[in-house]
Figure 1 (cartoon, rainbow, N blue to C red):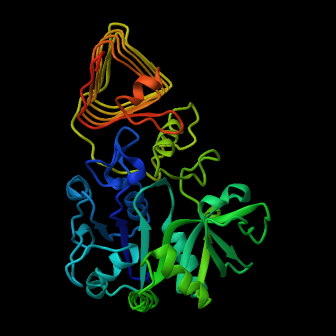
Figure 2 (tube, helix red, strand yellow):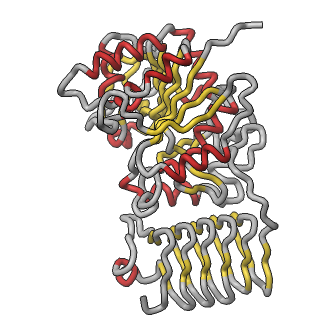
Figure 3 (cartoon, rainbow, N blue to C red):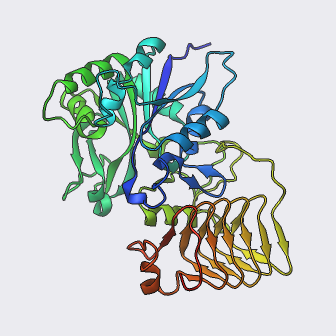
Length: 408
């Protein structure tokens, strides 16, 4: 039996998520609910656990209470084999200061590395929606002898200016690393595509420690993984790219293979939800061979009464739709949609109540909101903007615990 490398996984979950406001007004970005049943953190943790990486530290900082609670309640391990998933808040081990960047977060948490003594360190972000088998990426990393391997996803070269872009040779060695370039590089086999960084890295432990310490001594560094650590290793010709297109996940379909979304803006977050609700979804949550894991509450089934109905939608447990219509929407658990209400193209998070005769269109309604009887949201954006944020794409966001009225 082939011996497996000793791996420690570090999930970077301390981001403030300003572009997802108001969903991040009261919680860390990775704790934002997604897909009716999940939180964003569940996707990266599911990928790691499904791949057999069972020693995971989640570095938190910004408004982390709900995230810490979710990890503690949902992602607890038996520990019999030394496995653990643990939230690690900012420790201020290097002085009375918070993290100054993603690299500084790991530098301040090197005690975790020294305690675990891993051969390799997996460093993944916490706020993307995707399926991936990171074990295959680790195999590539080990086979090349890289100091760092960066997961790259192919995007059209014409759209790559919005990403950190990777210029690689035919052996996958990274020759150049450019943030949001005006002229993105092509891939070795396709001049019309570019490797965009997915924000997922695998390091050889010694190389990571050495590079972090050298970066900490640079007064002009931003102490960022993508902005400083990776370019330093690229310059040393010790960085390689892992093509996400090579990754194969059990149960994937042709339609959702290679799906990855950065949901860092309201419009991207909304669009990712709309990817879920078609007959043949762009991202399939119903793949039991590579499950996205989360807490399953003890709730009764969803109920449709008095002619209430939903079409092209996902509806969570404990929800009641009474003499109302829900179309093309993602409805979480414990939602009530009352008589005569219409919900279209919207995302309703847990505990939402839509009052009688209310209309909600192209909106994200956060947890425990009460939309008053007869209120109208998402129809008149001029009126909406007086009460709520409206994105560039026309998505109305209603903040957590909001109560609205028809004339409010």
